[in-house]
Image 1: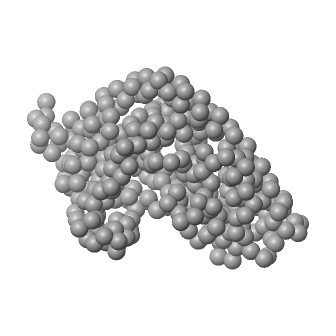
Image 2: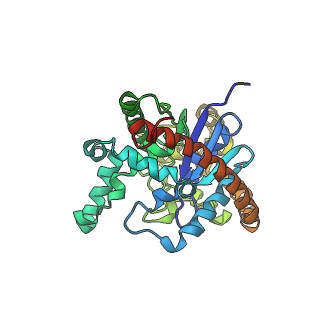
Image 3: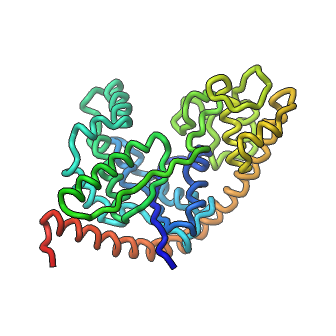
Length: 341
């Protein structure tokens, strides 16, 4: 039996619940990798402390809730190696090595750094820009390269980070000898970017000014259904996927496709003869209610049984530490910090 290719990915724990954009854009895709790949899935708690200010009082709770969300979504610990990033010390250690092999210019050109640093600067001045925001990409590179990952599932806005990871790995290999596997990004075609229901020009986000456009996985089902029913559309009364002319309907089509696994063409055909959007929205609402009820029942059951999950994760963490310590030793030997045997 041939060895499975390796996929690694993770999400940051944040206070409050995940929303359907997180679920469809990330977690649902993780389920497709179980069994097919050797899947490493981590709670990115080191990335969560990147801002100068973060909710440290509730971070441990947020980490636990994210694990419960993974399990409730269908992550199987017999098929997936689920762990806390900070429990595997090699992530932080390799990050420093990779920072030393990365230029300021490369990091300063990262789109997310430019966007976020400008917001920090506008609000509080340049002194407030956290250094962690600048060196975030090398830590992400360490997350990926430690496991000789073949593929990294990312949203479109994270693709640049994987490209930098590839550049760092290739540069390191050329300078110090073959050390890292060069990873490839996996970008889902649909569901990778669910938009706000009240402003479909913006990505769905928990930090949105109004939560009416965001469906959280822990929303009461009837509340979520109402958010779908009041989602912004247009006057065309035509279920057609056209992001420029019909961004609201296109977003709802994406959501419905993720809920039902129907293609865009199948959805357009199914609703070709509707007179208004009410029928379409009702069908989406029914599917959302079904999803949330299933998710929340399993989420609550997982939290009640979390001690068992924690014990399983300890075994997985020990496995991850064994793998990453070997890789870190190879790195240290190649750069001259440790003697080669």
